[in-house]
Structures are given as structure tokens and as C-alpha cells.
Amino acid sequence: MIVFGGVQTDNELSNEVWALSLSNLRWRKLNALGIPPAPREWHSAIYDPVRDRMIVHGGWTSPDGVLDDVWALDLSSGPTWSRLLASPSPPGHRYHSALYDERRDRMLVFSGSGRVGAPRVVWSLSLSTGQWTALGTTGCWPPGVAYGRPAFLDAANDRMIVDGGVDGGVWFLSLESLAWSRIVSFDAPIPRDGQTATFDPVHRQMIVFGGYSTFVTADGTDLADSWAFDVDARTWSEVAASGGSGGDAAVDDPHETELGPVPSVGDLVASRGYPFFGLDGRISTRLCIARGFVRSRSTTISPTSSGWSAQPCFAAEPLPNAVATLPGMR
Image (cartoon, rainbow, N blue to C red; front, side, top):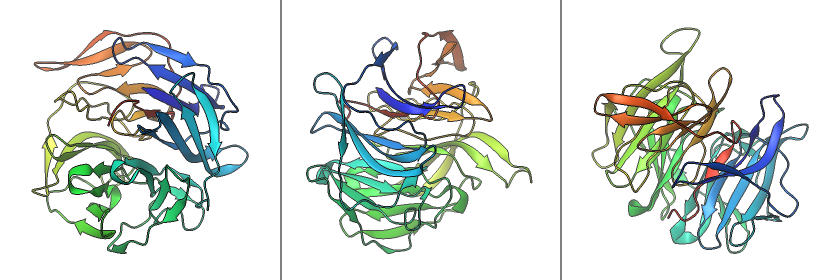
């Protein structure tokens, strides 16, 4: 797994690149060649399997603010940065979602916050030509929200699925007709913002974890519950889970069948699995890896018959609010 950027413990932004071996769970810093992107947070990244590269888009940096640039990290030999002069450039994004549409060889970007016109438009970046296109969608699209919405690809049905969160709904976007449809369920979880979500293509369900809600207390509450949305039956059910502490994110691994939670609210990142890192009132570097999750500075949490248990973990780690991609995952 490759991660980029984030916030250092002194609140300075980073443009470092780190790699996590999924065979031994050891981190190492990659010394990439070329001119790197500006340090940033709240950006997005996907893995381009055709060209063996990570694509990074947008985010926020100081003093420039919201970014609209696109960068590629070539992984085919020694990792090398290059800027993609994509045209025409869309409005800048942060807190947005990005996903890889394999059928059309493109990156889709949606939601988040940024300059006028950014959040509610679905943008497509052709990975073969570098051309940006604002997709002319129809139907009932999700309202804009400040911190974005988790979105991911349902390849079997050729659609994008968006968790509404604070609006308490789920939206489908047909990638063929570009028509939005809203799914309203009376058994939906409490409305929330800043939640993590992932799509389990084997069991045909969206898994939602945590977030922040003002529906519990007036001052707001960090949530640590897990919910599953069956995309075929269009019904919600709460996922029983126990154990864990702090951080952000839960995610499906297509090679495994179980999922582990990491309580709290934070930043959702990643292409095709492994959302990564977040803030729970303080800088936090905690990683969820399907059948367990790593808390980088101390322990690995793995499932037992009665819940989750702590095991030794490994030392070196990247930064909070970094963005991850998984080379080789398709």
C-alpha cells in the first residue's frame, strides 16, 4: 500500500511517500524521484492499474488553500513524480471522494468542498488523454455538504454509490445513463458527517462506520457504530462489533471476509480498500486492514471469537490525513 502527504505532529503539512508491505506489515519511506507535489491534506488518490501509478488530486495546502492539480507517481520502476497538465482544470477540491472507473479508464471525483461549482458536480479525468469533463448528470443528486460523502464503484452494476450521511439517504449514479436516484430507507442509521464507508462486492453491501452527529447531543458526538446497507435489498442493518479504540476507518479487503472497526471520526481515503488515518480531536495515525487493524505506534488489533485483541505492531509510520492506494488491487 502506498500513502502520500498528511499532517506532521508539529501541524506542518507533508509531501512524503510511504509504503506498507501487506505481507509483513512493515512501513518504509520511499524516496521518490522528480519534483514532488506541494505538501497537502484532504486530497484524494487512486491507483491506475493500466499504467502502474498513483494519481493524486486536489486537497489543501498553506498558503495557497484549495488545490486543483493532478499528480502521478510512477511505480513501474523507481517511484517518480510528474505533474499531469490535465485540461480543462476543474474547481479545486478537498474532502472529496475519488474512484477508479476501470471500464472507462478514468478517475471520477465527487463532493467535498472547494471553490464554487466543485462539490455537486461529478468530474471525470480520462487517464489516457488527461482530459477533464464535467459529467452532465440528471435526477435527484445529493445536496452539497462541507466534508464530502464516501463514494465508491459498484462495478457489477456500473454505478457509483454515495452514502448520504447527514442527509440520511443513499444515492446511486448510473455511469451509463448518468442519472441519479435516491434510496430512502426508514431503517437507516442516525444522520452523520465525516463517516467512513467502503463497498463489499462479495456480499453486495456498503459498510459505514463512525462519523460525527449533532442528533445525539447538541454539542455533537463522535460515533463508533457500524452499519451495513444491502445494495440489492436496499435495507440497513447494524453490524455488531466490539473492541478497538481511537482513529478512523474500516474497509473491505477482497481477499478476506471480515471487517474490523476503528472508532471515531476522520478523513476517508483510498482507492479500492484501506481507508487511512484521521483526526479524533488530536492527531491520530491508525490504520484499518480488514481482518484486523494496525495502530501504528503500538499495537495490531485482530479479531478473536469474542471481539478484538491487541498484538505487537511495527514501528515506522507515515502521517495523519495521508492518502493511500493499493498497487495491484483491481
